[in-house]
Length: 268
Length: 294
Image (tube, rainbow over all chains, first blue to last red; front, top):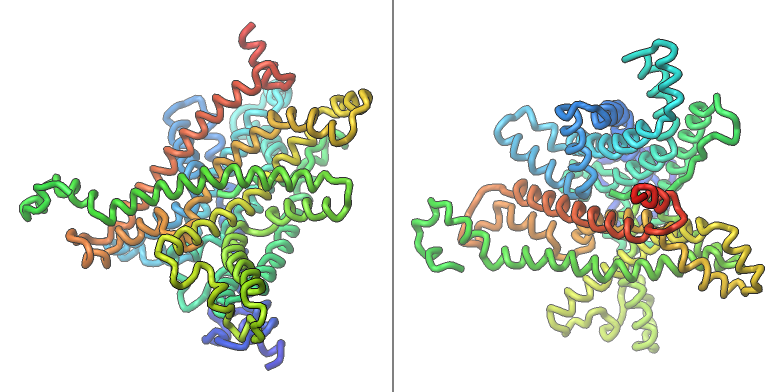
């Protein structure tokens, strides 16, 4: 079977298009690359949606945590503490069984026990908490001169937040947020190892890599391929976020600009 | 465990929980908490050691060694840690068996990889098929420890590397002016001073290590996640005297609370340690302390 044929059969296997049966023996390199690459669709799906939705919620959380009113501040503090203080792995397990129990009572929770929605919600809440803490830190380090200048212009409330505080917060938080995006992307590999079932063997990249490693008992081919995919996408994230960082800093003199520094100490 | 547990009437009472929670399998569940703590206690120093060597290698003026160190550090930035865990457990196991195979059975002529099988001679099997149960379990635990240490060693290496670079350059120049060799500069100037700069990263690493312990489950260890799934599931009801519905949610809620408490306690004690270490240091933290006292 030619490699082109394999790509046609398995290129979109992870979302249920193409050949139903996974290859069972005599695995070729092409099959490794195609199936693991096909699994990357799920990793990208989880990462992109969780990051986009989490970004909005994190902004709200950060403002709430910085609020002087304890009725608003306390829930945000607890939310951030809960999701940052516990392992993502345990959060996945807990959420899955919670949804399973709820499903028994209300049938409306049926889609929540599937990874595409259930795991996405956990990832969304998790990244919101981590990002919220980053944004909160940035909010607190906004230069006093900026807010003073806004006040002097008579800006208050929403316009002041929209035009002065929020852009500065983003600019300050961006290097840390880039890290967060990378590690959220890496964390998406946990989904199919934490009770969320891979229905009809539609799994993510690590699911297929693990499938190959289990079948061939040879970890030296599938995992490096997986690693290669992740390195490529990590570099893509860095490039994209670097471009945004440049735009956020474009009004500053060269030497004051925040550099992107990728620090790896952020697994969940 | 208690005497009243033999009385069937207790089933309807609240006291029933005290019977349920002290069954033999629950004891295994409690013991698995100590497994997690043991893993942390063993892994943390080993990972720090790996990290130190990694950082030293990355700083080395000898290029291939420096590449090795940098490669070790850079890998964890781009690749999910869980992939490393899954990889190393099989890879290490096969590496050990392969090495033993080469030593113990030199006259074996068949290939080791036959299709999808990995075949070594009987004497090279790890652990030996004849060895007792505890050997199998501790071998699994040993592999898990090494894997954790390797992965977190890379994280520690990057933190320590950053710490070494954060030591003020003037200090190093002064050492050179006094005629110290690079080796002396490293051991007498850089290493004693880097800890303050590395500590925030290292304490972060400790938190990360705590939160990575549930991954033991993926490495095939009967840890707390394993037992929470087993005990909470309905299917165990056949084997225990106390049938119940699907309680996995509650078991995992308990684990969630356990980890929250654990990270919170670590956070508080690390903060105290940081306050002690920054005392009198020429950093902004130390400066703030001095001003607060004055």
